[in-house]
Length: 126
Image 1 (tube, helix red, strand yellow):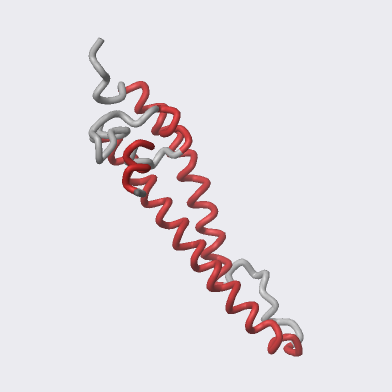
Image 2 (cartoon, helix red, strand yellow; image 1 turned 180 degrees about the vertical axis):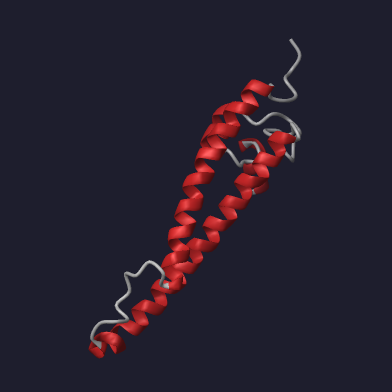
């Protein structure tokens, strides 16, 4: 039996559903992080007594930096998921960009935006 070179349309549709679900959750998380950074979540202490401001200033700066990092990471994840949707449209989804072989479906279900097989990913770390 010949080795599969691409996923079937039905399999691609299954992956599309997984990606769309993850994309919706990721976008929701990103929006919450963004709201936290802009203060539009209305959970800030800016309108309360200023006596704690000096003590909290350092903690707030660290918190904002961490939130910014999380937001950037989330945005990268969203962009990777969107790129995976494009690969589904082009019927190139699930093909390892290093080896040209199909990435196992189990890996794609766990990491739907993967572009490398475990074999290729591990060989790049050495």
